[in-house]
Length: 330
Image 1 (cartoon, rainbow, N blue to C red):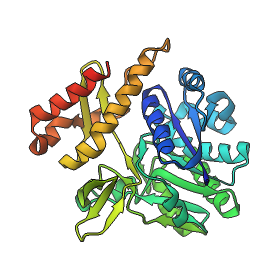
Image 2 (cartoon, rainbow, N blue to C red; image 1 turned 90 degrees about the vertical axis):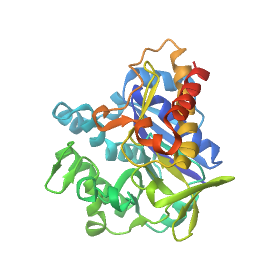
Image 3 (cartoon, rainbow, N blue to C red; image 1 turned 90 degrees about the horizontal axis):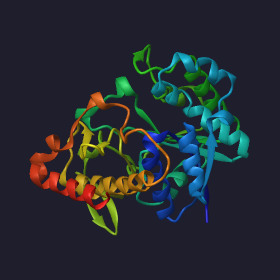
Image 4 (cartoon, rainbow, N blue to C red; image 1 turned 45 degrees about the horizontal axis):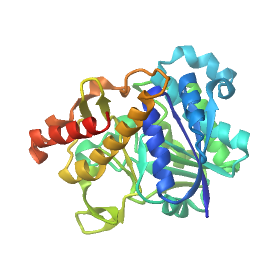
């Protein structure tokens, strides 16, 4: 069985997402190891207590080097998390002597094996994934053509050269606004093809189904979840990126960033994923660990989910289904 090396980062607010990511990789039947950088002590201790067989838990004290500690006070929490993305890839390659490592955002969920993506990347030293925006939601000029969600580096001269440049640029500048063709850690990926050799742009449309591109597809289930283009090309969904999903346990409400969500997207992706997160949150709350409220980091950019999908499902139906999920996982 093939073994793939992945790394990710998250803090207490994303524990349930990180565990869902881990479980989804297990469910694909693909051999893997997930290197998790725990961004706070409680998260590290909680994860270590789970004894996840296919994971390695890394703490901040062992990870942070002098360069990162030097610039840390100059960044907000989110900006610092962005800054360290290339550094955790470098750290895993160096410390564990890996042949390659792929960074994953913690809010991804896999529905089928990522093997086709690695088959496509084969022969390249760097693999990057497109946002694949729907035309009406194209933010390439601001957020970049590529998404820091699935980024592959081989541990060779070409891969290390690109990774080192990305890390150095993020240390110099990684902020939550657009400036001189930069935005966070993400727009740097737009320059990879121009600057480095053996860079592959992943074309598999099942890589990175997300709120900004779901409008391009119809979805169906036949053992797997399939995306179908409007010219009748079908493909299995490899992973969905649950960007900016917010759940407020106290108010029993769910919010999504504003895009257009079809009934199939809600039924095939969001409702099962929300149920999964709530199951994990219920387990976490039954421990002695005290974490802050289960929220994401960008509350100003989201609206209540039912306001955006009531024209598809009906307001009362959606609220009732979400309420049932909450009450079943209390």
